[in-house]
Amino acid sequence: MNQVSLIGRLATDPEARAGQQHEAASFRLAVPRRRHSDGTDAGAVFIEVVTFDGLAKTVAEYLTKGRQVAINGRLEQNEWTAEDGSKRSRIQIIADEVSFLDAPKKADLEAVPA
Image (cartoon, helix red, strand yellow):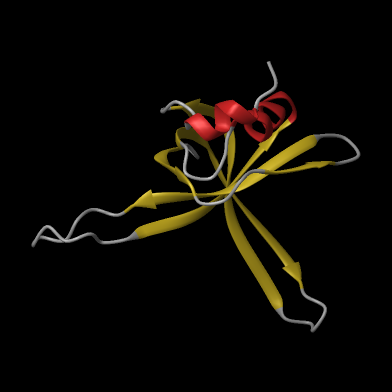
């Protein structure tokens, strides 16, 4: 079963783009690592997340860097050959659900037209 559930904060603002068949929005999600045994911060893992169509529109419109979200989706690996002939690979999450876990900052609310 290919299923992923994560909670983290957006490390980037969502980047929206329109394709021939689908609209998409992508962003990097910072997922905290478990703390070290001495209680110090262990940093975060940064994961590329992609959403499509209606969810992409919602993500692009309402989310900004720093917002906390829960992601449910699946892993996908893309492979390609770069211009220099080297083989490249990227793993990303295709999100089927994105739940907003915090309220927008006051500055974000002021930017939304009434």
